[in-house]
Image 1: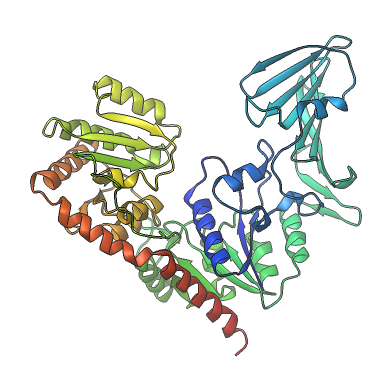
Image 2: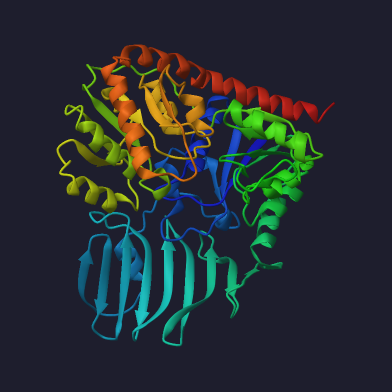
Length: 506
């Protein structure tokens, strides 16, 4: 029996879906269950192994759609600059390096090679670009071998990609991807031609040789859903719902608008053995909606997308009046609201400090706000960090997200005994914040008036400290966190898998 978990892409700033999968990978390893995590996006700028290893996947658990049809294994990049240049004739004149980009020039011809390094201090090349006469002609991609080459031709003064080739360890071509004038993809194998990504995905699914002893778990389906659904009927199929699954504003008593990312799965719910949601509240909502709006009555189970191995106590006394948040610095996380709220609360409680962990596109905006209010001495951007031992150093966790399907950072925060302050929105906040018990839920409205939001957060921060609720709320957070300990989540996965596989035999 093998469990195949299917996703689209992964990056350095991965979303909650990838982190949820990484948690799941650890659970399956602890249960000694054979599992594979499949990524179906074309990922070439970085060696995908670096991305998957970065969040905890074991190499033997990962399948990348595009190298599945080759004999090259998932592995870290180990090809050196000298190895790249060895196959490139010419008389080298000089080199220029800017961080992780190394450019090698040749004096005998108008040509140069640009090597994109794993690290500026290392001599290892993730990919290389070859330019002749001012024209990009080729890109090579490396792990321990060259695994892919892209070929370009000049057209209208730009480099046009017309072919990709994926290779075996011995350098032979495993298959080619040809791009038409309209940039549609044609996959050319030795024994077949496939037209378009859905056809490639179907061929891949058939390659898995699925049987009724296997389970397919679909985490994302955009562009691949139909092929997965149809081929997974040879096995068992579960669908994980990672976010809000419908649009409340566009729904009424007679009509429900599913989230675009889940519409196909819900419409074809009769082909799904079970849907997996991360909170009991979302299960309750989804069951009610199927009863009201659909003829399907699928099995829906609650399994948290993450877990905590243990409750974490501080190694030393927590820093007084310390606030923390951790997330991608993305617009939808609304960290700017929190910054402004803390600035306002700081006028009442000048001892307050606020540390922000994470990175993203909003970083420059946050710095501008902090600087404009001369708040640098008590509000700081901390970047990425391993937060396991950092949470217990703080007293309160803040979140301004208006939508959290689960909220891994919320779980980790309560596991370290932090009271939480956030919006009264589904589903993570309503799961991890018990209003008045281990924090405060702030009413949310569609208009999102910033002045009111800033005032509400500031008032709750001040209330928590002025009324001395910290000790009781800390105890309540620890108690709530017990339900998310790894052994409990492991048991839920074990029971669900056993039930799905057992039901097929009766």
